[in-house]
Structures are given as structure tokens and as C-alpha cells.
Length: 213
Image 1 (tube, rainbow, N blue to C red):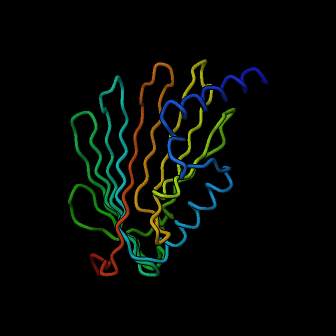
Image 2: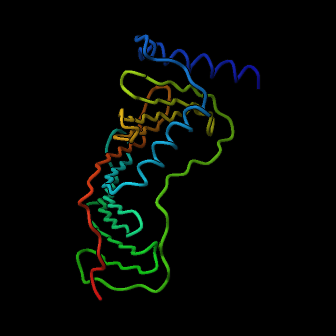
């Protein structure tokens, strides 16, 4: 275990140096606790504002996108959530929409542009991204103070292969997240298998209403 830990540590810091992570004096190493605290604080602040969040997830095989999911979610605190998911896979396109009013007390849905229906299954789910524990991994976390960029790189061994996860979160001077990127893949040679980007726009004029009575 100690040898494997040392090996992965060498890879993590080697990649960081190779990517020029420490080229700027504004970049410094931080702990995972500091990383999570800063991102959580930004997310909590964003949760108090009306906003539109666009997330694009791409699954890749041999550098070819085999599945693409674009989810546009509009939030109005204490009023509701409207989410629209467009999925492209195997040459077909499907669109799913959900509206939750008053913390999910009313729930509406429609598929592929058809008519809205009111659901009674209480399908409200808070839209958060959770990452579970990994069997064994080594990681490095940095912050670029000038850019407001929080980066994380983790490497673990999975099925006798080294795999990586890179994540970047940009937080503005106003303390709000503006953009997020996540890349997963195999390490050597580097092969990306998943990409995700998330863009945040804040707009007090966003409104959400029940589509049918």
C-alpha cells in the first residue's frame, strides 16, 4: 500500500508540474476541506438567487461522443424549479421536462414536447451533485487566487488501470460559481471517457409558473 501510495503521489505531482499548475505565484495548494468549504459556500450563496444552470454531460468511446445530455434548470427560490433535459444517443433525441412548484408540492411533467400532465407521485428531488467514496485514491487540490479557480485532480486504481478525475470550479469576486468542468478518463495513455460542463447565469427576472391548472 505504501509503495502504491508513493507511486500515485509521484504521478499526481508530476502531472501538476507538467500542466504548469504552479506557474503562477497566485496558485497555491489547499486541502480537500478548504476546497469543499469554498465550493459549498458558493453553492449556498447561489441557492438564494434566481438562476439558470446549464449542464452538458458527454460520454466518450475512442474519442467519439456516444451520449450527450444537456440539462437546463431554472431556479426561483421558494417558488419552483423548471428542468429540461435533452438526450442524444444512438441517433435519437428525447426531451424531458419537469416543473416543481412550492418545494415540490405540485409536480408537472411532459415528454418530447407533448402536453403537460400533473403528477401525484411527489417526484420532487433536490438537484445536487454527490460524489461517493472511492476505494483508494490520491489527490491534489489548488486554488488560483487571481482567477478564482479551484482545481482538483484525483487518481485511483480501478480494474488494474489508473483512472483520473479532474474538476475545476470558477467562483467570481461576488462569491458565486460561474462555471464548472469535470473530466474523467484513463491515465496512461490519457483517454477521456466523460466530460461535463456547467454554466451559471443569475437573473432576478426568471419566473416559474404551473403550466396547467
